[in-house]
Length: 385
Image 1: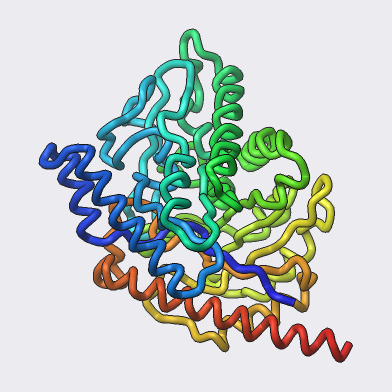
Image 2: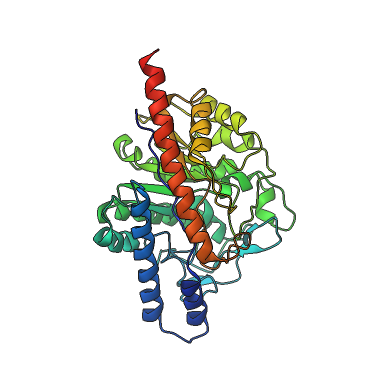
């Protein structure tokens, strides 16, 4: 058997591109010049991923402000913010190192994306030699654009959620139509929903069930055959080499996450203290039949938040341990998180984003070789069973 493997999505943006984002915010370069810098970094990312042997590639999200805000704004500073949005929304997350990331605030309706991820796919399939995947943002993240308490005059919460579901479905369908073979939905807010951080009011409102229900409103619009290639990614954050919810007991999420009717899950695990327990939980709660599709658990075997490069043997051993609890036909391998989900991230533990790009490729090579070793050993084990 061959264990399937894919990356989550993002790669560290080179310092040259990060400076271009800053220059655009300051009016020093045009939008067209920023796009040219994005295209250059995207092409380099695809080339380097293909050189590692990564079977399914992305542009490393070089063209995105962030995994969360690409539909809404051109830059993290709010340059190019879409209509009916203001820049002073609530925090998405406050990270352990003290920094935070903020969402825009919805001011009126209707809610529409100004950028669809398919625009990135259309460019990537023209230059990639390998199949292309695309990560998209979950509706559960974007529901936080709406004020927590009050209603927006003339635009009810229910109408917003209906529009949001339509836009998220459209985002996914357009990615497939543009040539993506896989689409994964970023759901990092899942674990954070179980945290009660007084500095961040939405985290104390027990929203996980609402998140899952809303995400299923989108997933349930797709057939079982389509959902085989629609994934869910979860992690406790991964920005500036810091996290936002690793202190939250993982079971609080995992006992509910597989209620999502997705075909596969990209699950942070390598950076957990008790990885074997995570494998047990995934084996226990993942479903062989999620409304017609078996759920494949792509376990995180690479930690993107540290410059220490895992060995192929370490990756192999983690996957063989996971196979004790997760059926081999529903086991995959991934990285814990995107390597740099936001477009401004100097990767402080690495020393520079350019060095972090090199490290990311070394880590990806280790994952691929570890997958090969684990697949061969599982083949041998099954042959002698």
